[in-house]
Structures are given as structure tokens and as C-alpha cells.
Image (cartoon, rainbow, N blue to C red; front, side, top):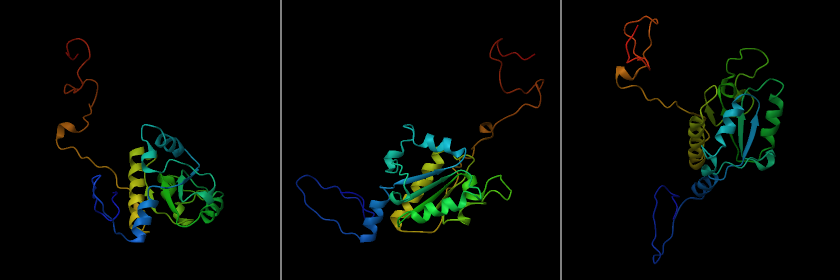
Length: 204
């Protein structure tokens, strides 16, 4: 028996049982594993989006691998890349054509905040046009960060929560000084840390 109400129970072949849950919890559990994605790809983050759909990262295990290029068949809008002022009305129209319930992922810094484009032609974040459920920062974001954002969205769908979420960076600070990146001041620095590949490691 699956994990529907926060507790997982496995029944043997000879046992019988039943599960109780709320209807909204059951619907949220079903929705989070059946996302039909509409990719709105406009810029260089599209390469990372393609990498995300490769076998290495296996988006299919989240139930979100099937793209739908009709907004009436999609419930998850991936906004991937920069949105210009001329593209904003088309993005708004696509969002309005999607059926409820629907969710939006802002993929990358440009979709989240406009990125480094500080000019009049670029929308400073798609939340100026449509509501956003999860922001995934990065230029471009790593596929691992995008998977973190997708899992965050799935958690929000299961809990029926509509507050925007932001993917936190995976911070693994060094524990010791020797784990930090050490740089030489010059080629003649006597404290050179990188030994020579040949010649017995003597420095000249």
C-alpha cells in the first residue's frame, strides 16, 4: 500500500486492510506524480533543460517527462530562459489557456529576476506577468538544482500549498583549510602546491 497519509504500511499476501485519507491529500498525491509539462524555452537555459531530460538525470522517475505542446493538455509550465517584453503577452496567453490546477517553474536567473539584462526590453522576472510557484536560480542552473525545484514543487502540490518557493543552493562548506582552492602568486613561487608531472617533482 502506498504512502498516502504520511504513513506507509505493507500488507502481506494473506492480509487484508484498508486506508483512510482525505480527498485533497489523495488528489495531491496523485497530481504530484502525473505532471504534464509545457516547456516555454527561449534562451540558453534550454541546453540544461535538454540535459535534464536525458537518461543521466531520468526525469521520468518523477512522472514529469512527457511534454505537452498544447497548453490545454498541460498543467506545469516550465519557463526556461529570458522573457522579452514582446514575448510576455504570448506567455500570459499560454498560462491563461492552461486548465486548473496549474503550476509554474521559473527556470534560471533570467526567468526568475531578469538576470543580467538590466534594460527595457527584458521582463525583470516572469512573476511580473504570471504567478510563479518555484524559482530555480542559476545561470544556468545545474540539473541537480532543477530536480530539487521539481521535488519542492511536488511537495507543494501534495500539501496543496500555493506560496512561492525558492530552491536553496546545495552548500557543502570545506571542513579544513587544505580543502580550499590554493592559488600560486606567480610561476616562481617557492610554495608551489602543484608538483611537476615529470622530473621527480623538483622545482626550477
